[in-house]
Length: 119
Image (cartoon, rainbow, N blue to C red):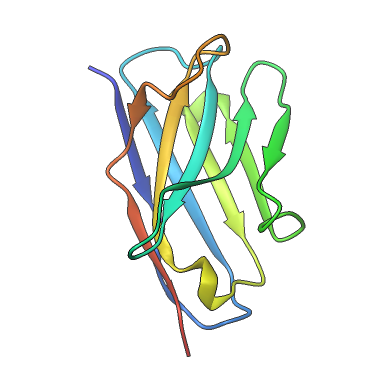
């Protein structure tokens, strides 16, 4: 059974930092793309970043470029999202997801972790 478990969310002041973690289990994810998505209250879910574990290539939404960094630890089957210079508009539930490189959609999703940026 595939499981993705996010952690690391919380309340942070504007300008602060958080690091989210996504622990993957149930299969070998070395060939997968791992992604982070977020959904704010009353908003559509949106792409944040993804990483190819095989090649290490990354991509980011324009809204987080230069502030967020996605990385992976193959030995731990864990993907991270380092979030710096957080803004109130980054407030959302953040989800981890996994897909095969040839797939157009993400097949596996975590339960989400809440990030709130507020003073």
